[in-house]
Length: 453
Image (cartoon, rainbow, N blue to C red; front, side, top):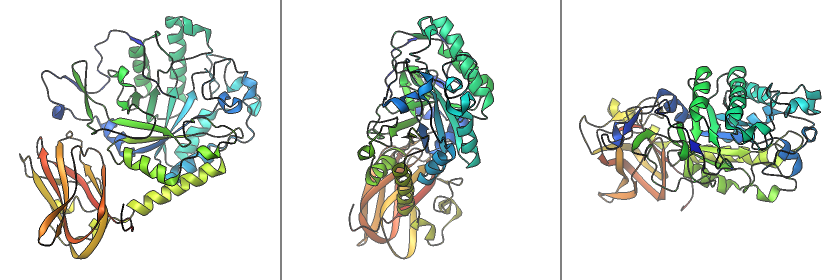
């Protein structure tokens, strides 16, 4: 679905709405997230929904020639989609309002190539409105993806004319469907085309000042969050939130997208064998959310307008697996300790432990009245003041000495570590190196109940 942008960027001095600093005169640790980025990173897990003419033509990429009449689902039920996503643990929904084929899932006034020209609901339907309403009803945030590439509209050949068309569609989406938590800019197929991204951003922010814009690194100046660089649902590198590009530093947290089905973003008939297993989904979850990023899982309603029953069941199983593995935090049963330490052990991400002022190394210890067995740790850094932990280790007290269990570099929003089961009355998080005093929201311990990992 995604490709790196091959576009011509118009010259601009705009900084994407967030603080940006010259790399030559500043350090990454000087940058802080915006309040909107902080809130968005706490969402952790979202779903992106692909549904359109491709659904009825057994395609992944439409060419813009499909007759709108092929879009004729019998039972569109976004509440079913949202409930299934919530059961998996998702906290936000992004709907692909227009994919690269140009077909619009709302009755836009800018083109006839939309649901208004389909037989579905006699041309009176609005998938965007139905999905936004369902998300809000079940407590999930809502966002949209409006593809810049349009393989149907003839105005696409004229950059200025197409920009006016695209901005008018964006204005409709930004003013008619409530608050948008995220806006996707995907430049797949756009090589050689000139977009006025500055105007796109200005239009969005006029009506939706708090929306987080997700984009490829090619749109570094315009996005608030960045693509991971693959569609496998894996963050394969140390995840630092601050990125240096073109001599500028930006706070750009990472979002990793991957479909529920192997390599399939849209529904295809007889496709159950491509459905990812619970083990695969848990690996994806721990490789994204567990590496300090966002997970964006792709869901695809079928030609009825429903998620297939097998998909719904798999999402439920995923949520159950996450809760089973990370639902019983042993650290909350710690021995009495000082209020500062307790703030990282209380299971409340709104409180945090602070290392001594001015320190670059520190230790956070948890003690138990009786021996406990665990094989996983979850650590969260308080990022409001920036990302500061550069190296850490997790250790357990055994045989009169500290035994190393895991170590790493970036903690960031959330870091999940697994190791061989250990039984002890004492464990600790060692901040081995930090640019300034570390702040830890949570240090949690879990037992998978398995003899090994």
